Length: 342
Picture 1 (cartoon, rainbow, N blue to C red):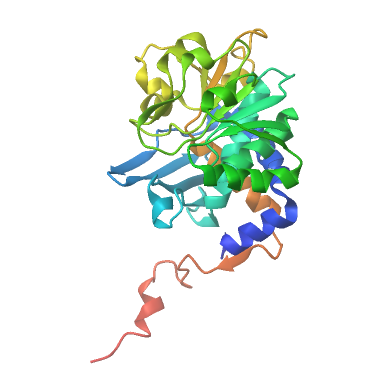
Picture 2: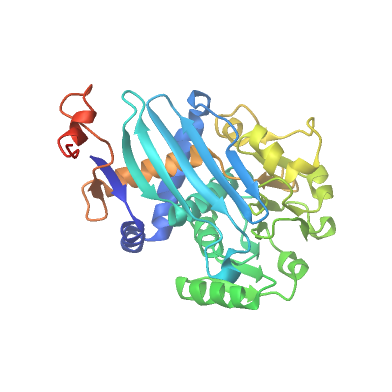
């Protein structure tokens, strides 16, 4: 039998455990897996692009467990009453190929994305960072705020979105959680005086959400909205001033902010900083940029964490996903007894 966490189970588990605690837990698993980065099979995700959006498969394996995530990204969905992103994921045992764990990942991806942002910020942002600007206050905003509070202790937010309803939603959700929030009249106003800048916008276009002249020495930029070919958020000039860090370079060159740069543009993978193979922030005035597109190892970590945390709880179900005849060579025997005769 395969362990299964459906939407009701995931939401119930997050509500009972607390999203901030879960984000911290995923961060710990991310650290474990990034520390053994070289053991994983890695490849850019398999993407099917249409005028409506993208559908992707994200596979990886550490040669003990195999994982993949199915995920879409459709920026026009909210206007039609649908989520921009939906996802589910699977863990399987490489020794027999059986799926062992299946989970919804729409909610989990939001938690995983926030955990990855905070994981990178712990390695790259100034430790005394106190104010975060959030450009884009859609589905990811609250998770990012909780993640940066968990990682860096940030409680002061400056927010901006072109959609006033999205801002109102974020403020409504975050104020009761203890955040101090300033609603800015523009992206430039939100960024002024911030230590960390998180961009998370949905439009599938090459946009300049953050202009070069707004970025001050010492800032850490957390660019998470640009995640497919033809979609970026930052003025390319910013990349020339910053040290750029990525998850998996071959994928980021296709999908990230650095798609605007040539193949020789220098970047550092996060695992290299974690393991001491490359330096992180090299001074208080340095500008650091995490060019995040999301990578399969992060989903692997998140799935492992959920599997371990919900095992034996009411949030886990068992489903009969794998046909298992008494004789492994007699699959027909499962259906033959029920086949019509004559």
